[in-house]
Structures are given as structure tokens and as C-alpha cells.
Length: 88
Picture 1 (tube, helix red, strand yellow):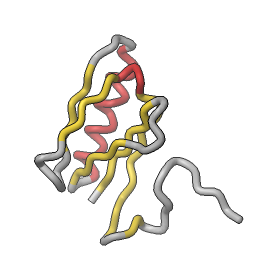
Picture 2 (cartoon, helix red, strand yellow; picture 1 turned 90 degrees about the vertical axis):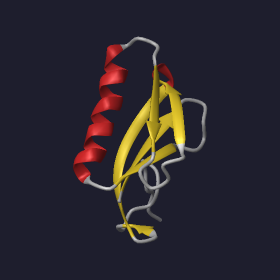
Picture 3 (cartoon, one colour; picture 1 turned 30 degrees about the horizontal axis):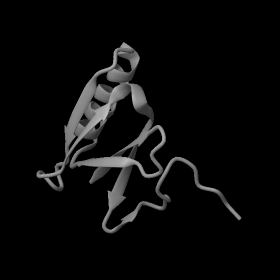
Picture 4 (cartoon, rainbow, N blue to C red; picture 1 turned 180 degrees about the vertical axis):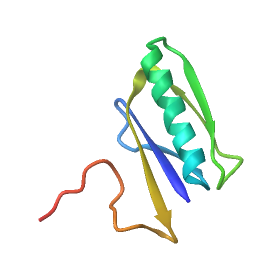
């Protein structure tokens, strides 16, 4: 399972949707990037494959980051959630 996390300005928690395949996750990632590059204030609506009833709508001009991560079981494959992992 692949998770696409979307960081929105002034929101402390990322919005996430999941895809079963790497290709589908990459397609969603590219869709978000293209919307950001377009520069026009538009709304992007996404659904989640793991929870089909889950829908989110995001104003693209408010997106400040996006990432793809692979989940295996209940934990990420050696990664902490978010964009930065700080060591001690």
C-alpha cells in the first residue's frame, strides 16, 4: 500500500490518500504536481483506495508539499511519518 501525504499551509497534520500500486500512487502524485504548476486556484478532489468512502477536496494554491511513502503492514518500511526525520 502506498500513501500520498499532502501538506497544506497552516494545517499541522497532512491529508493522506492511499493507492494499492506504485503506478497509481505516482499518477496521483503527478496529478497534484500538475495542479500546483498550473498556478490557478482550483480544487482537487481525491479519494482513498483503502477507504473508498473517504474523500478530500483541497485548494491547490494552499498545498505546500506532497510525498509518497510505501506502507508495509501497520508500520512504514523503516520510515517515520512526515517529511523530515530527525536523529538524536
